[in-house]
Image (cartoon, rainbow, N blue to C red; front, side, top):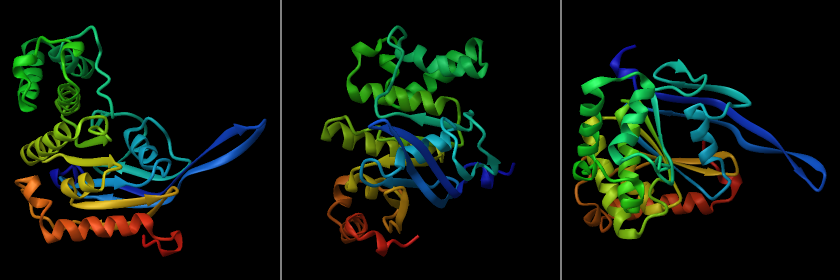
Length: 266
């Protein structure tokens, strides 16, 4: 596989349906309705939309945790047929193993990949240092703040060296100040690692500040795909909020979220 396509992602005509039993009757729910989009290598794409619109379902299908009812999903040119080390997933809550230290939580994923010996610890420490937690290596999760736990979760996902980092509202449960700090750190990490990132969020500001493109979803469909004209590196995110380009991009996302479904542009 050439490096140029290593982090490319493609969803083609992907649908997902399942049955729910309501009042003793089964109803078919269409979580995704023939969605298609591509993500370039090293690109950051955010998925935004109301709860239940299919954002997380799309992410879980990409990770291989769920299978599509119809359609084709590829990462790095390879068809997704289950979970794999070419993808890393960061959840809304870090889901750290409570009996392990921060360092051991990162080591655990690498051990599952088959890494052993000095390389295992050295690699884990390198990624812990990458997220600024080298001094917290021996702390257990209950000794970490919410933001620190999320940093460990990001380090754990990055340590397996995935082509694509999938993030499901990883900062949604954090306070505003911690959230803004981690947004900046994520952009710095991506600038160094060049990972492709697909990031689910409900927050309009976050979607614009992080993304190269924003995919707006409504009721299992893509409402609109919006290019974000902000330059990289993004620099001071606080200052970016005061620019005309940020305001215009945010308004376009807001407008797409509130547009009638018939106005959807795929």
